[in-house]
Image (tube, rainbow, N blue to C red; front, side):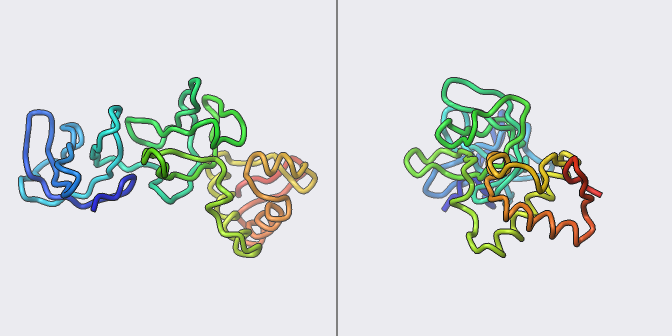
Length: 206
């Protein structure tokens, strides 16, 4: 069974001028475009590929590795927007859609957002949601530990964060989707691990 939005190991069944066809079992043959075909592979070989949907909503394979797969969280940059929502760069040719209903605030081009990659239950299309709380653990201690890793990834990308102990809880919730209590616990965890410094301007990665 093909796992959409995930890695699959598939057998090469046919070579054509524009790529390879892989055995998708019940889904039929799936195209791996020529630009992604590794050197030296032959018909009958098995190859690990990431499966997603092309512009025509058909299954397509790639050997590129996205920044996140279905069921994972990631900081993704908004590449462009239209009247339906935002499109996020997740490392593949086709950007990942985040509809307005799944945004906490209107996403803007060039800004990064913490999102969860999912398959829409109704359309079975891949999409992102910034309303990540429903997919995160809710135990307070575990949630703080989970968020400390999220905050660390944010700092690794941005170098610093201007939110501190005196920042309004609304600003923290808007940016990260967590309570001020969880945020402070995560900051404390990173500080104890000597990964950050704390100042009046916020926190900075060591």
